[in-house]
Length: 296
Image 1 (cartoon, rainbow, N blue to C red):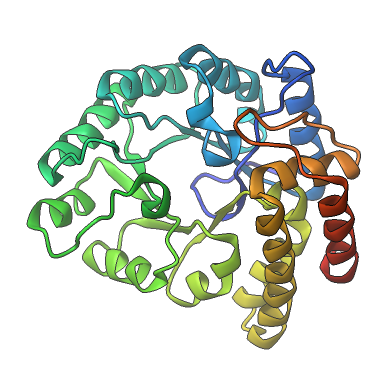
Image 2: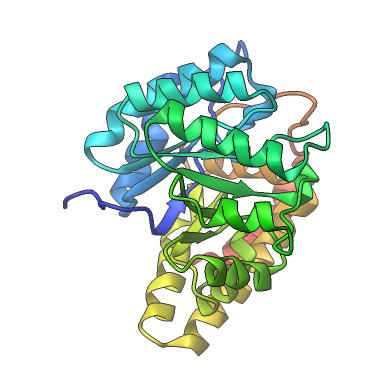
């Protein structure tokens, strides 16, 4: 099967495996991505929040890009290059382009309260460094940097040729549709796994999700059912997925995903501190919820 020529569909936000010495484990990453390809995955989002990106050093983020790059001949590959400093994001973007990634994505610069003109320039500079348009990673719950569509500079950003689309990791799914209304050419990817059906209903082209690391078949069924207009069946599977999401979040999302992958025979190591591994009690609770809700 040929790789997709554009971003869309069901895309795992791939985790960063670590070895016993807390180093990037390239071999474990290969096992995970091979396993996902065997499930039918056609696209990967590398180096994002699920990969604990802001807990990695500059060199480790580049190492992760390099370890995943060989899969570019079989899957559509997106590299998350976001950083606070434009210079660092540009460096990530240039490296991703040199490794033949198909797309780059970036969170907005955060912490210092940059205005919309600074954010506009940041994305323009990343696009120039990458030599390709950028997917805006809209995650206001974590970056504390929302996009105000009433602001003319922000609207101009979303209308710019150097913006590919948006990874909309925002529970306000209404804004996904409003951004698409500003520029119908944008690729809109829903970013919260638990709102996949809602995002598709409002015009999303697909979803990028952390739980797709181990739940790809479940979410691919949701996507296929929804696109086939079998909405009640899609919603029923979304409810099961949300039962699982509640249990994962109760235990801690990233540590719980790594636990589940290990239980499924795809060990990816422990999460990086200050994350803590889940407890045995949390593991037993997760096992029960997965057994009751997960579709394969």
